[in-house]
Amino acid sequence: MKIKHSLRGLPVITALLSTLAISVASTSALAAEYNAKLSLDVPEGNTKYVAAKKFADMVRERTDDNVDIKLFPNSVLGGESESAEGIRLGSVQMGIITSSVLTSWVPEVQVLDLPYLINSDEQAVAINEPLTDELAPKFEGEGFHLMGFSVNGIRQLMSSTPIHSVDDVKGKKMRVIQSPLHVAMWKAAGANPTPIPAPEIYNSMQTGVIDFFDNTATNYLTNRFYEVAPYYVKTGHVYAMGTWVVSQSWWQRLPEEYQQEITKAASEVQEQLPAMRQQDDKAALAKTVEDGATIIEIDDKGPWKEAMQPVREEYTKKIPNGKALVSLIENAD
Image 1: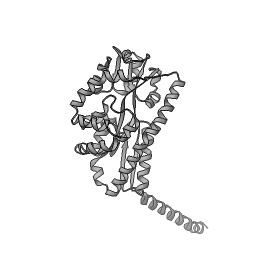
Image 2: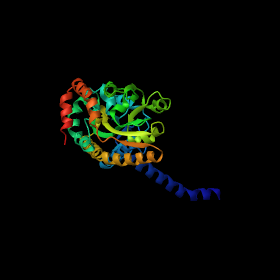
Image 3: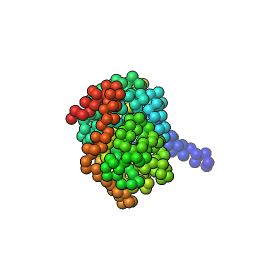
Image 4: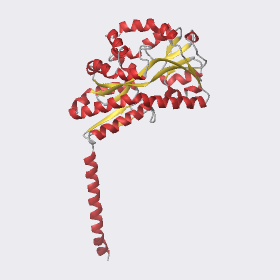
C-alpha cells in the first residue's frame, strides 16, 4: 500500500518540480543585464528619493527590464563624499550628490554656490542642459559621467531668534557647510560662521554653540530642526543643487540605446523635480507651523544681495572659467 501511495504521488511531485523549474527560469529570464546601485543621503519619502525611484522605474521600463537601478537611501553606502569616491572608482554606479561636495574634483561646479545667482525654479531648470554640456568633459576627466542637475532645495535660515534683516545676523554664531565660499559669504553679511558637520547641527543649536544655520524646508521638518530653531527665515540665498553622476566605467559598458534612454529619463525627472519639491516644501513647513514654528518672509532681499556681492565677485574670479559660467547661468531661459 505504501508503495502504491508513493507512486500515486509521483505525478504531483513531478508537476511541482516542473512548475518550480519554470518559475526559476522565468526569474532568471527577468534578471537585468546591467545593475546599478544609486546612493542617496536622504530617507525614503524625501523628494529626492521619490524622484530617484521614478527615474529608476522609467529606466527599467524603457530598457525592457535590462537596466535595474536599486536605490540605497539614508547614506547606507556612505556619506556623499564617500559615495562620490565610490562612483569614481566604480564600486557605486550612481548618485544624486550635492554639488558643493564635488568641488574638490570639479572646482567649476562651485559656481552653483554663489549667493543669489539662481533665483527661481524656472531658472534652475533652464540652466540644466547648457551647464551639463559645458561641465560634462570636466566630470568625465575625473571618472564621472554627468547626467544633469536638479534642485535639492533652497537654503533658508533657521534660527533660535527672529531674523528680519541682514542686520539681525551681525555678530551671531552661524553653522555653515564646510566650504570656504560659505564661510566668506556669511562673514561678509556680518555673522560669525563656523563649519560644523550636518549631524551635529541639532545638538549645536540645543547647547548654544550656534545661533542659526541654513538648510532646506524638508530637512527642517524631517530633522526636527524647528524644535531648536523655531524661526524659519526665507532669505533664499542659495539654490542647493543635486548633481546626477554615474560611474564613467559603468556607463561606458552600456549599449548606446540604453545610454540614450537613461539620459532621457533623467532629464524628464529633473524637469519635474521643482514642482515635486514645491509641494513637499509647502507640506513640510505647514507641519512645522502646526508644531510651533514661525515662518518669516524676507520681501526685500536687496540688502542681503548687497552684503554678499563682494564675495560673489571674488569667487567668480577664483572659480575656473567663473565669469563665463556665471554669464551662462544668468542668461539661461
